[in-house]
Length: 611
Ligand SMILES: Cc1cc2nc3c(=O)[nH]c(=O)nc-3n(C[C@H](O)[C@H](O)[C@H](O)COP(=O)(O)OP(=O)(O)OC[C@H]3O[C@@H](n4cnc5c(N)ncnc54)[C@H](O)[C@@H]3O)c2cc1C
Image (cartoon, rainbow, N blue to C red; front, side, top):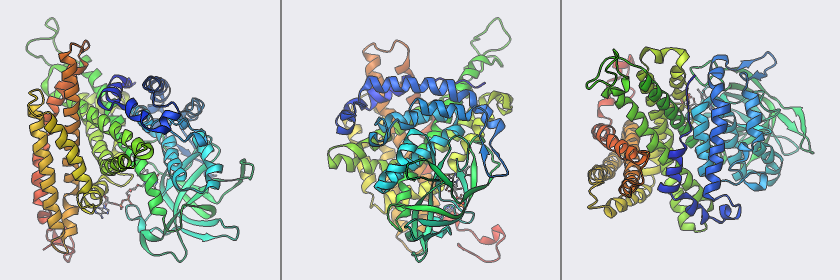
């Protein structure tokens, strides 16, 4: 069975030494008043979380994969053996309520803490984690824009985990392009709405973990404008709720089928038929897309954490295997009396392991920085600080989703490679990580769409303002450490790449404004741009971590080699991974020209675009 130990040492390093999180959180009255900014308390909660995921979720990961979910003729769905019992323990221990509002039964812990819990859950069992994960998204949207009446009925049930939630956007003909959805809403005499239509690919859309499921559904009210401006958000419970809060009649929503898919078998991906189902408006009419974005932003970081979590566990397993497996000889010999040495001595195996370690630790640093920024955005008493944090969150969210899931999948593949042929065999669990990691790049808006969001909306449409703020943070760090010999070479590389990010943005921006084909320029380079940007952010975080590590080593406080490992992993990152930026700069500059080919190449009779 795969192994996993929660990376608590690294989490504590980031929380206390990199981010100084308890002091930052203590400035926010919400956490100060709820006594949840305390560093020792956060450590204890995460130690408890580690025990839960290692003891309860890890043993169910292979079971869920092999059994999958089963749909019965009446539309009900059974989850794999042990899933329900683990969910009940998770609920009973209060994990569903961890960062939720105390006004609805939550514990009011910082988002920073729940972010680490989610990473660990994803390391041990992505498919299981999606049940509470989607509920959390539903909680966020309802909490932000729901009416007081809806909140009073549904939020305590979702926060306590008694009921779960879903997000229903996708339809057979509409995935990326939600402006063309067809699900209809018609107002009933009592003010509720009748919802009709078909939603596909709905994660956790039907299951046996809880007696009720709260669907948040995008639908179009009759007479609303075309496109995304005519979409509203509705709450549609599987069972209607009686005035006393108990479960009432079955509502008109049924699971028509569940998908057979590449990975995450333990999570039911449901086709849901809504047939005049009773729904309640959430937020304002025709503002559904804006409201859903609240949920989608939370879900995007959550999806990024799937990539991070799988990357961490794949790396841990590859490391354990590489220490144990002996093949070929290395000079000088490690096992002179035996016929082979452990494969961890071979540089190419080290390259694969260090790639996993370097991307994972930088990803964790970014995710925790982002999570603390979300706390700041919501709870800092100073408006300017809230705005700064909100801008950073907006900029980093598509990077967190796409860069972490791309890297997570690559790490899963590289870690599988460390196992040689044994990585391809089910028994070792590595092939499951590869399959489970793949979906993160696709759902929650494909990584291509995340890249368009970053370059198009967050950078160019914003006139580069958010980008400039981030560049300012990087520049200040570089200037403050000028002359620091320990950091000189990293900062030289980082500074050049940060400047180049600015100049590349200008080049793309100018091409984008140069005529009708401008939009294609953005579309052609966005994925490479996001990857370049991701490296700059990771480079900055590696430089900051290196600075702290050097100080600890100089002070003689590195008994277990943790800080030396940070320095050397950073050196590997800048030597072997960061130079990818050079190739990316070239492909960004190459723009759309080589893509605008004669369409007969694709078997089309007439040119759709291009020459
Ligand atoms: C296992 C699973 C679970 C899911 N869970 C949920 C869920 O809980 N709720 C929910 O609502 N949905 C869910 N989805 C749906 C998922 O979010 C969509 O599949 C995804 O957003 C992509 O939509 P699509 O599949 O229709 O692809 P399409 O939109 O058809 O895209 C096809 C390709 O075209 C590209 N493309 C499209 N438009 C552009 C453009 N303008 N520029 C450049 N490239 C473009 C895309 O990037 C993609 O590569 C799930 C899907 C799966 C497989």
